[in-house]
Image (cartoon, rainbow, N blue to C red):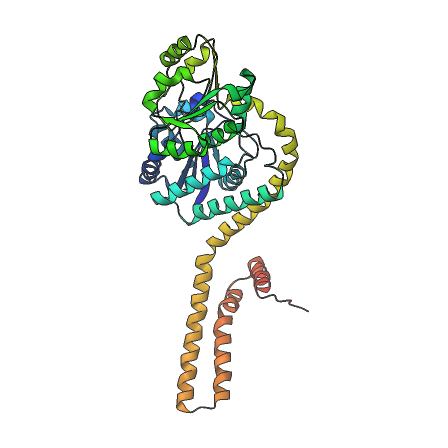
Length: 417
């Protein structure tokens, strides 16, 4: 059984493709079980974020798993195959370590991906698709990410998506403390964005979410007010900046809704930041004259400023990852010897019990204890030495020389000295 990883990400596919293969969080258990029922893999986990959809698996059929990804989303295989990558075992391990450490992120060193990977592991565990091999790989990935972050400067001055959203908004408005901001959603990304925008002390912060209680809990942290998703359309003209990131499969803000809002605002500009995959805001809205619409792909344009200061740390991080890959694969290889080791120990244990039982009978008969101990040690020695000695006697030529060197290595022998 081999490990492999496959998927698409922001390096290989545009947003329009990525959003077609995204998994909604509530559908992950169903998807994982569907993959397992197809008997394509023996262990599986799915990571689905704004920037990537990846399958981490243990099995023998990576190609079939790629076909499953297209079929599950009702897409022709050729629709995603140009963007799909597949990593075999060593490359898969290295890829997961790099993803967890933030080296494969749109924003180098960003920490959010680690939390998303931990959620992917929890989802697979709850779905019952996480076996020993993948579980160990996830745990090792988390440990590598922690080491990279604590021993290098890869996370220093990280330009997060949230900070990028603030930066883009500041390009349009001279001062954000005069603006009213609407956040749609109440997940981790919105929480991060709200924290960044709140630092600019805007005039008003509002949070709209499908679950009112979740919105109120987040609003309490930032002295914000709340509204329901049904109210977004009527209240939209009130806001200068809209940041949306939900798990909705369909757009929440449509073209007609924004056109009406612009009329009510008398063409005052609006900044709209769509961090969702699939998108929350219809793409056509970006064509309106008074709307500045940014997607997560657009945010990549502003992360270059801090890239050089972090790039020097990549070499250190990659060295940590390479060493960790070797260590993990050594553990994987060692697992394959477990049945042999167990069988060897069982054989030795049977020999020990047999000689011990014989010695106990002699002692019960009244034989001299020293003679019994001598017989016990000789008997046990003969039984343990018989297999390698017999193997040497049954082969000849190069095979005997090879076996002789192997036995010398195993028993730390130095023949001829």
